[in-house]
Length: 148
Length: 145
Image (cartoon, rainbow over all chains, first blue to last red; front, side, top):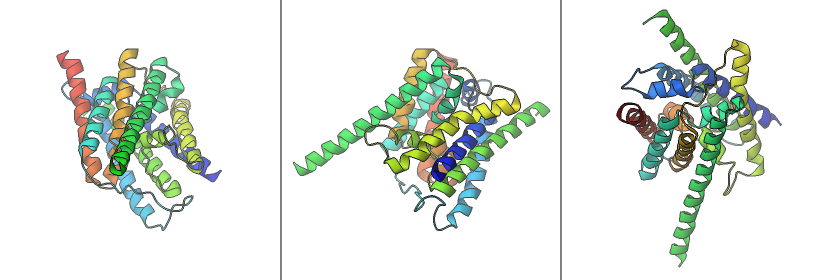
């Protein structure tokens, strides 16, 4: 129960932050990515504010032995910069530039009920499932090849 | 710089600070990185997260949808803008975002906010890449086509 409440509060603060920052308006987001047009730098301030708070907050949180509601911290351990990372980020950026939605703001915009946002989120979920199935198939294939 | 611009930038900074606060909250209480694409993908097949790990993810997403509603109620404005491209384009974009974030293990929140805050070079590389292809896409769509 405490886990549900803490998840809800974190999501609520995130959604409120995105809305306040203008990230839930795709026109604002595309204005930021349009560096050759009427460039709107506001989102750089959003990123700046988020990183300053997270950088400082993470340093404080790291001093604790464990999180309040879980057994241990799950800090990412991957460090490799490979084709998967760059290729995936590139695809994501193209989609972001086409519509002006990245995953957080897209989900946060669902409250408006706009059919276009729903279509984007459904397609995004489908893309996630598809890519996870492809990744899983390749893992399986590699395992079969090793054992075969 | 006009006073209007300064006000817009201060609000953007405050919105960013809230996003950071949400990320710190999730690490402090759940011990998790606030990567929205990861939180979403872990709920989907194949191999969804175990039952014990599903609750906070779903609760987080519910909060995420409610956040802008609260902002709208407090400010009296509507912060959620309408989509600016056609439905087929939204579907294509959604597919690319979904596939790309799973392949690249993150999006603007996981790599952009949390990764940069951890001084991760991997996240810096991902962030520079999606910023660059995002800007290039807008350039092609708005200025070349």
